[in-house]
Image 1 (cartoon, one colour):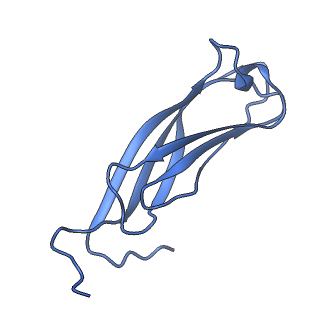
Image 2 (cartoon, rainbow, N blue to C red):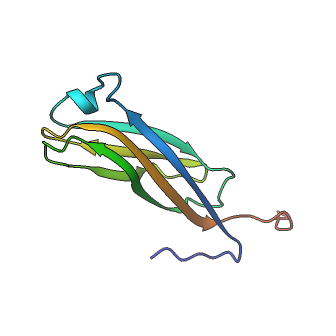
Length: 116
């Protein structure tokens, strides 16, 4: 469990279109085997420490004739942002994915400063 030491808690959130491969014949739609897409996400303002980040798929468009396999995660979380990573494998064909995210963590206040 992450324990927050600060009385100031910040929440940032967003939505990211990961890709749209159907129109362009991209590898998520035409490929097979392990495939991955990574998008860098920047927070609106910096957190004091790396926040907790929750990600979810908010829209997906997949081929109904194939197995639907998907993994989505936040990687490399820092005070400034994180990498949003979508993976699939096997014969899965993914046309489009949109992901939503929320970050919760400690933030600073203008009145808080160190003398030394």
